[in-house]
Image (cartoon, rainbow, N blue to C red):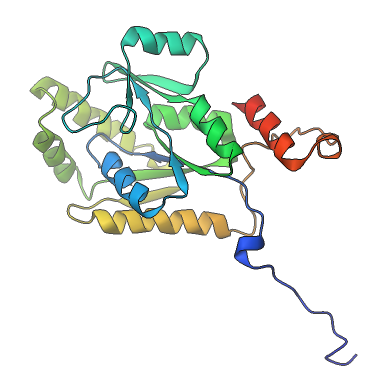
Length: 242
């Protein structure tokens, strides 16, 4: 067979390859810099949707309601739980935190990838709900001494509360092997940490064997694609899962 008769392998360009929308869950001990990493990611990755967590804790100086968190009373938070509006929630340092389902539904139906800010409890719950659909990233400081220094410099906790957070951080770090990736957020090296998170995002999107899409439960009925269009199937299954 001549070279001209040989079949050619055609590789579609990246922008033509269908990739499922994905969830990235960013976790780490208190004071490690989760909020700082997310704030920077917002600036460099406008295509991502960053889910705003609901919390019953008081607003800190410089925080903006609806951007950093949705600040609600404990009564309103518990009402959200009763109305089944949260994908997961937990009591963290005496205050509730939870992930609103509505944001995930709306933006995944629009084709956006999602970034969630969670704690170890939340990550464990999400892992049970979403399985392989989500990418779990654990953020750490370069060492415990640096983490303690950051917590002290924050000046948001009493001495007793500070000791609780340090003890909790020690326990949380023990779960690092449950995560897909670990990123060191060193002092003065925020940009490097963010670039590494970006690299993880890009690597996951470029995988030949993609993670199961959040809107594609394993037991998807074969008749859906025949009866409905792709967007309709996606919407139904996102609603079913969330």
